Length: 143
Image 1 (spheres, rainbow, N blue to C red):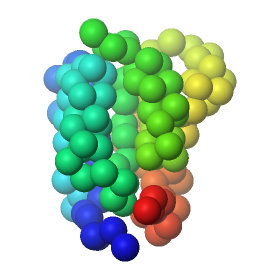
Image 2 (image 1 turned 180 degrees about the horizontal axis):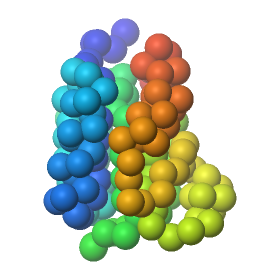
Image 3 (image 1 turned 180 degrees about the vertical axis):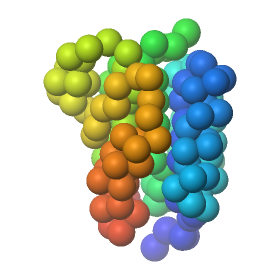
């Protein structure tokens, strides 16, 4: 059986101010989980590939918070890449968007939930509780 890991939030957003806001929101929610940050989707995918190479199919305990508009690789491309891989396809992903009416498209691409920008602590809190609570109770283990 795979070793237990500590759950972690993965924050993927090129806007440093938004990353700061989300870190503060997580702190206000009394989250004790570590936060791993990436400023673009390409770096995050590289990280996922490195984790896979190093750890194989151990328990996946990431909870992803990701912007759509980023350099090098946007959030939709990252989401599609994740959903094509058996180890990453069930990882919950909350997407941030400043474009109205994009929720349905993002959900069809595999987003677990969407939050409009500008972000609010109350909406972030609500979506995180709804999206991530079941995942923390029953994370997927591939062996």
